[in-house]
Picture 1 (cartoon, helix red, strand yellow):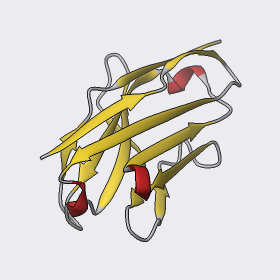
Picture 2: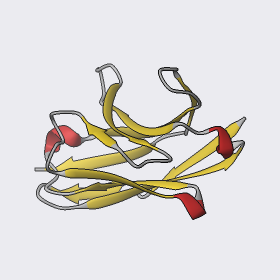
Picture 3: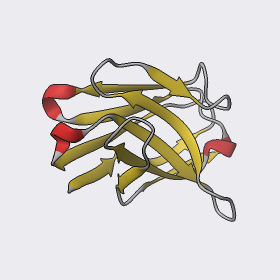
Length: 119
């Protein structure tokens, strides 16, 4: 089992920045990748970014490329999402998730943190 706790959400004006954190505990040694996802009201959950835990390779959704950065601190078992130049369409509940093996599903999820971007 892996427990994930997000923090760092809030209300920010368009053009502003926020940094989300996701602290992992439990069986973290089995982590292959950590990802961030988001779900806006009335919409399906969508992929935002992912990082391969051990080698650090990253992948981003086109909608956030150049604005968001995912990075991790292995010593702290924490993954971050630095969000710059925020837009109102970035408003959503953001979730972090853990994947235990390559090509597998994201099996463990955090409770989510709300990000609201005002225009």
